[in-house]
Image: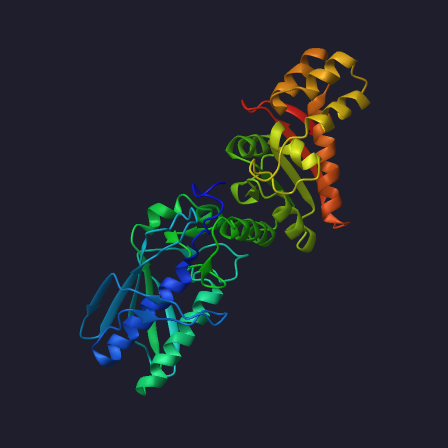
Length: 363
């Protein structure tokens, strides 16, 4: 991934939906108690930072107050960048503490395995704690009880959620309110990796004994058809092979299929755990050594060494009757097993070409 900036220009950090929801909650509760919205509104993040947020919307009603901020994800390509995150705060029953509701655009948990019970709004634990702490601070400053109902909404969240893992994880109706630090680190891809982990959790909670980690939609379709796997047993691994394997090492599932294109799995076979083109490359010298070890003649070895792409190397080998796809699959499987470090996970690998044809397997 590239940002379109020069390497000498630092990338700009942003704020999570959890931080935005906390800012909106702080402003809304303050207005409910005082009749005035603080703008900008300061929040305290888990590591002590104190960013201030400008309000994009405010509404004071007789029994509720609503405030909203626009999420700024900085220079990260976040699907929720620019989304309007709102909080509506009402008085709760005495002694009830802070109760959370999912407003329009925020999902509801419908499957076990997530860090929230089924039926709860998809507002993750750390954002909840941030909002509880903010409510306590406002209540303490104004002599209030802190017993409130907080309803979080995201404009257009249901549509945005279709571009996330939420439907597969059983979070229906909208987005999740996320964040562990309150800060979005540009291009850290932490949200994707977190979704991989939650996908494993959901699969385990559903009792699935076989999951497939796939590099893209084509390999996902192939794995689902090949093994008859349900949607919640499919992990959208993308480029993050290491994230899948390291999490399964700690939270094992009896069987793992790794499915992907010849290029990405060639990189996994070489020991790369981040398969993105900007962070790892196909080593054609290693591929040439691989086919030489399999008995290829000098012409084919040199053809593979000078190949333009892994797919080019594959086609040369196919024409010569040499099963490069199987060799890559075996190497990728060995690399995966090494990362798993003895965890009770049986691994097989399926290698496909761009059309989705299976060109290599290792059991």
